[in-house]
Length: 195
Image (cartoon, rainbow, N blue to C red; front, side, top):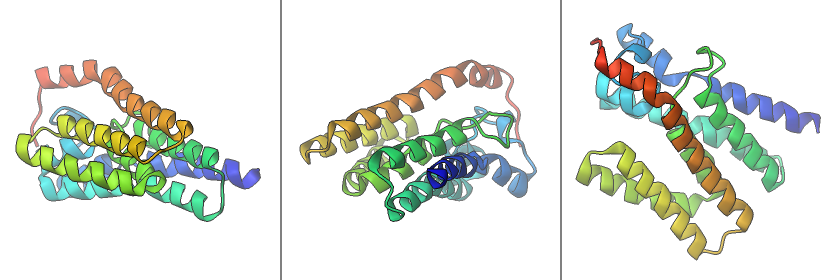
């Protein structure tokens, strides 16, 4: 049980690494919370610092979700514990210990968690996400469609109700974080700062 609790804490700390914040400071000496839409995520980083940096942030944020869950799986933790550890990683990203409990919306980190739990389904969703993003250039729309396709494929493949409700809950967590960040992001858009 001590190992299980330790991995929950580990997942939260790893999830808390503010990738976009640190990357923006390192690359441009900028505070990502003060530029673009103020979101500490890959999309805002890509828009303000370029797609290469944004892609790097997305990959690291993905790994923040995938690695703790993969470790739990390798250690033989039950599915319930793997899901709890994935949740801690996403909560760490959303409410970072290293950024005064601010954070991104958790999309990339959530995808990392789900990739370990539902690899084939998440890969299918990711392919659709890429196609929709290419066609629309709208990240939020493409991410929502991709996550929806992941769930549809998972249902068709006969996932358990536990995974189903977990996936829906994680998707709602992304939407909830977007909602609570909306007033701050709107304020930043009204008073934009450039790099």
